[in-house]
Length: 440
Image 1: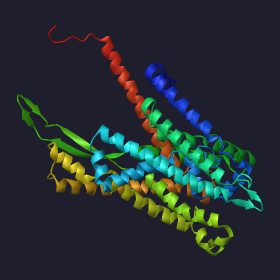
Image 2: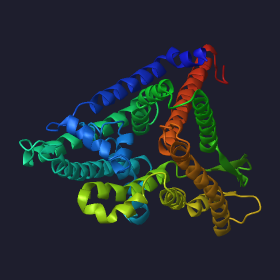
Image 3: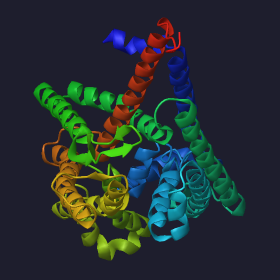
Image 4: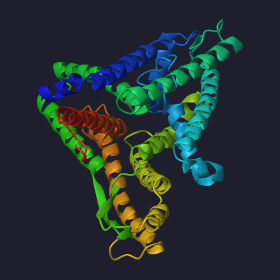
């Protein structure tokens, strides 16, 4: 095991990429603890404790604690991810963007540029709303997150400029990691923010064990459940259904092309973690509104209690929304008609299925079945922490969203490292050999 961990650092290029990635992630973590000017951190901490279970807790998870500190990176990478999802949706309805998506590298660069502009716009809107909201928050008589002498237009402009610049800087960090480092930069930034909570979670568990709130057998049971959950997550993220494809033979001159059999790998979970994020944000929205309304929301207190995490109503709606968003997002990211058209264009077909519309219907039928399995998997993984925490009182600090992100990003990064190791092996093999042309 130690040898496997040491192998990537033996290759100069790969070692440089890993160290470059770690350096930029360290810069990001430092920025998480730099507060926005004009904010009372003690009052902010008290206010955030009251906002547990709202959208702000979800946002704090993805920003690695930057939001609860209201730091310069408070918005995190989420505006960029939101802009990417919006651009992906707009590509389906705007013909110009659809043509760009099919123009290869040049079109991709233009869409990336549009995504950056949209990210800045979303950051300005979000930071503006956050500045106004924080400026008006009063947790007690005369006790404000933003002191009265600091509040005003100057604070709002400074907050918008600081947070928007912070988001642009994080976006640049993510792109640099993707291009010059190892792994997907945006995913790794979220990954580091989630994993940064692990030492605190371990410390809290040890405290409960020492005090006696948690038994040793309960702790062992939780560890076994976590291990089994990770194994299931890895299996489902790696799982796919293979659809066999046969290419017709074509004779060009004296050579015969085609006639080979391949397959189309349909992932069980095409939508990834997006359905869980959408469902969590939608259900956290009512609680967030209630917290902001304060005493004026007393009439809706019963309604708000239905949306408390762990309740029957919350869990039922959570499951239904995950199922819906899984199918919705899968229909966006995967188009059976396009796959069938490409197969027909390049002489490929599914054995026993006619090309064209019949192929698209066959692929869509299979996709709907495996999507149901993937959606149910997301529901179980997302509700498991709630069941363990509310029903059995055991600590399970990483929810379904966090677990899926951590395992998925870790798998993707390991695959890229393995690809670099494999490429180096081939390069070394060629250098040691003496390859000659046929004329020598």
